[in-house]
Amino acid sequence: MKLRKVLQNRLRLKHRIMIAILYVLIPVSVVFAGIIKEALNEIQDQVVQANMNSLQIYRNTLQTEIELAEQYLINLTWVNEEFAKFYSTEDDSEAEKASQAILSGMEDVFQANKDITAFIVYNPGNGIYRTKYNQIVAYGKIKQGIELELKQTLKSKEDKPLGWFLMNCSGRWLLSRIAQRNGAYAVCLVDLTQAVRNARLNYNIDGEVFFIKKGTILANKDWMDERGIRLDYSKEEFYYAGKKEDYIIVQKQLAGFKVGLAMPSERNNERVKILYFSPVIYLGAAVLSLVCAALYLKHELFIPMDNLVITMRRIQGGDLTARPLKYKGTEFAQVHGTFNSMMSEITTLRIKSYEQQLMAEKAQLEALRMQIRPHFFLNCLKSIFGLAQAGKTEEIKKSVLCLSPHLRYIFDISTEVITLEKELQMCENYISLQVVSQCGSPKLNLSVDTNVLMLKVPPVSILTLVENCMKHGMAQDGTLRVQIIAKSYEIDGQRLADIVVRDNGPGFPEKVLKVLNNGEEKEKNNSQVGLRNVMNRFKVLYGDDLAITFSNNDGAQVEIMFLMKEEGEVNSNNSLCQ
Image (cartoon, rainbow, N blue to C red; front, side):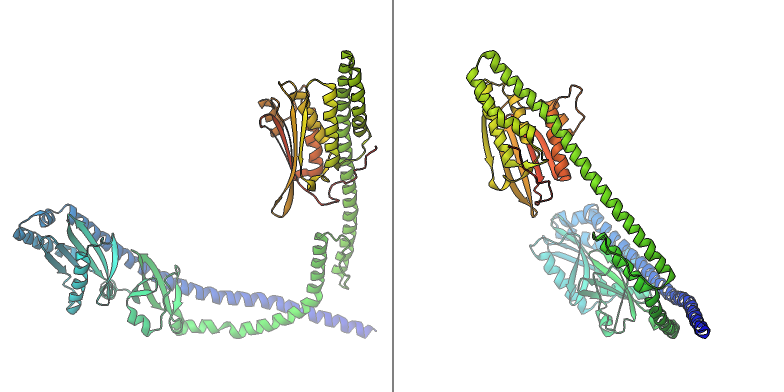
């Protein structure tokens, strides 16, 4: 038995040693791989940044040349006196001299802007067409194609393009700008193919410059095709391209198209390739060690932890009876005991808290209802007293007959909610009572959907609103008309109840509307007690799903809206003592 325990202890120690080795091996492997990756990323970033800097310098140079050419054309067409003679004189010889003077002044522009291919001036009125090409390039037959295409564009009656635009002449793309004044034209051309050559000769750029617009390569297409480079116009950052992705591509926006630079990738460097493969064997050994460690941790740690997480998710879903399984490990056994003890205590406290909340809400409802009972009772006694003073015996009898079910409803009801149908019956009875006991003929009009008749409402709530109409609306001339509308609507898959009580009286004072709608504290004279009572009782029942609005609409109007709850979500005990 002792030998067995010793072997078990040794086995455990072996496991601990293996775990310790793995704890050292894994960080070292991660650090080693991270260093290699960081070194490769640093090399890549340096190459990319160098390419971006070169491209940015070249792009800025081109942009500057384009802006200078633009400024030159503007000055030529709007400031230059010779151009003014060129388009305004009717003497062809004077116009010819003016054109020659214009062209002779372009030599300095060519010296400053080596990428500009040619300038052209053209006056359709006298047919004078003159060109000035950069002497660095001999275009030969290409020149004829360029001029043919340009003449057709200038002679066309269609509107000329505004700003810089691309024109394809004899298979070459030219960046073109046409300036016009009084029917005469001044044109600047930039040959993008020659611009690529100038990048190698004049700007000492390593790599190949290209121009692209969406899916069309504007210059250096043959070089790209030979190396299998497929350009992506949408890319904003650098990317790899080529048959073996052995070129780094960077691109910048320029005048409606992009200028780019293709450089051999650092992956083609033999020294860099060694860095790519150096950690493979080492990481392979680390992965094998990780597998062994994972199998061990799965049994000792992962399975117990998964069980604990599943238990916690069940508890979050409302299953307070869920408990984690018990494991042999000392730590998890302690967690098991502590967790179960804690959950038992939480369950007990939650049940007590829920019971206390129910008792508080029930007490609040009872207090609100007790506040209403003397309010109605005193009003009814006042009405009968008024009839007795007037000696109206028959009216007193009728009043008593109507008052009996009314008082029975008010004093004997013992539930927190009743059906809307029962509440509306009491409203009709109350109006009948008022017809007998008061001067005038109040009218009650009901417009109620059948699907809301069984809706749960606080007792004496709608009746309080009707009584408020009688109290504040009877002072008007004519017949007081009280209307109760109860409907339901479906919104986003839920049923919304809408109850409106309105009259044709003078309506709410503006100060009262502000107090009721803004939820301000009640005034010192305790006005609007009945209305506040109704609001509070509805809020207890429906909480945040309730909205009550007070307004004037040819009289006072109270609108109550709330989500219709399923049976059981609101206290549905609606038995009445008849």
